[in-house]
Length: 360
Image (cartoon, rainbow, N blue to C red; front, side, top):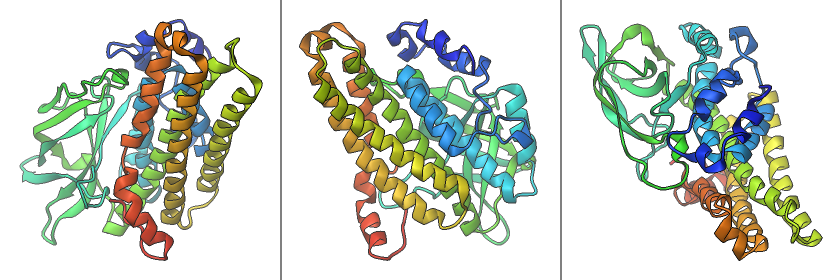
């Protein structure tokens, strides 16, 4: 993406993070939309290892942009996983996304308390032209810049509800965006509410993944992408704080090397797991479990490192450089992305003792 970083850095930092930021357009025009799409489908075909590096770099430049693009990559990766086993139109959709430089949002499952995060929360009812959908997704990143949105659904059939994934143009009648995100940080990610008011979905825009287990495998692969890239994004925001310390004349050598070492160890752990994901399809639920354990460890490393870097930069820097308190606050948001540590701790402990890992 030649010229992209320079174009971003030409904008003041807080302008990049504003809800009216044009960085998503800049990302599109510099050819970022197709990074995760295989070359066979018209994309650049980056590996998970390469995309982890990309997301960290995006997090350094703009945490909001990194969070928004993480959801695009998750959506695209889910379509890529479906294209591997499906005889549907996923490959044509991927090619259309690459050629049209379209951003794809996600209305995939959200975990209710005690329920699986993979369980769809939207249901479809029969309609003359296919199915009609009602419900909402909040928060939904890319809400005002998306061209397409993916949804996981319960679709009725004679044999009982079937699990499916639908893809809709963002301008489909009945799709409405409502304000939701009121926090002052990460507003540039456009994480508002997307409402489906009797939205008609044509049958040709729905892909059936067969059994529940098959859909779970698609979503598990998608969540591996999600967790790897999400963690890298926030690692980027923390890296920007430490970078500011490295560049500060008051930074001591022992403080600087200690904080950089912690972040580099975290990055190397992510790259190791991404490399495993790139090279094998075996035991993906186990890999996801290890990725979640690593994500939660990196959360702690980010919290400690960001706080210490802010302290080392000093009170005057905190008061006069708006980037410092912003980044400190933004790095905290990793803890709120699904699945939260609180929701997973019992399930992970059960899995570590030899039981099944349930994504709740």
